[in-house]
Length: 254
Image 1: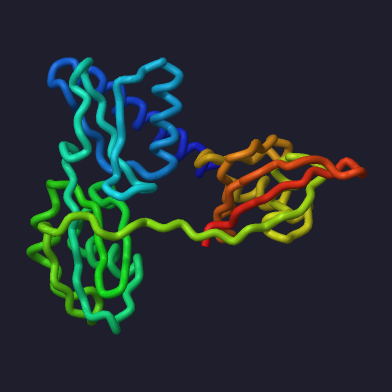
Image 2: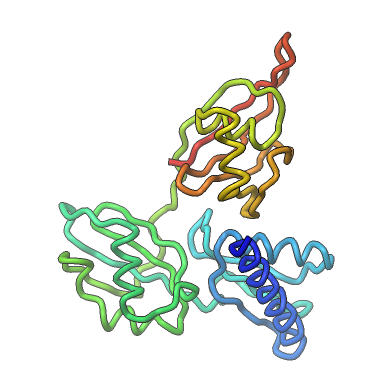
């Protein structure tokens, strides 16, 4: 209950900031948020939809970015992507070294930088790129020469060249209904009673909102997750068997 209360308070604070952004945009033309995570972005979109407010856009540097800034703008002031106050930081290192998302994020957080000033991190072979707010780019460039024990060269003059690829494992089968507990039971390959226990306990996120209702009905395209068990997308509902069970395809994010 405490976690739910805390989450509700954070959502109220975010909506209050959106109010301020809308008011300021009328005076300044454009106002930008910090980097929002997937849940915060979903809250913002729901609030804009509730108000039928359309003068906003978002950008996260990479295609399919999970962490994005929102811009609220006055009529006719919609910005181009390049106007968002963010920079692509590139880290070059030896190809034989293997570095993880956690390694890069840890090095940046160790500088005292807040998480909401950093966006997605994409890692390739011997190179990684990170979206950061313009306000902290100089701190990152000036203070990082190693990630762990691995030497890196850091710069901000390389355009985005890495793609944020999403890899999935396809799960196909049948469920008795589109209830949340039934679909999670299938996706996690656990009993329905255990799935219900997880939902009633730590909860499950559906489209980045916490749900504790086992009977919640999922729809095609919904993204759902259980902490510690992974993230999934209900890709397709494709018919009914002779016994009345529903064919579904679920994609597990890898």
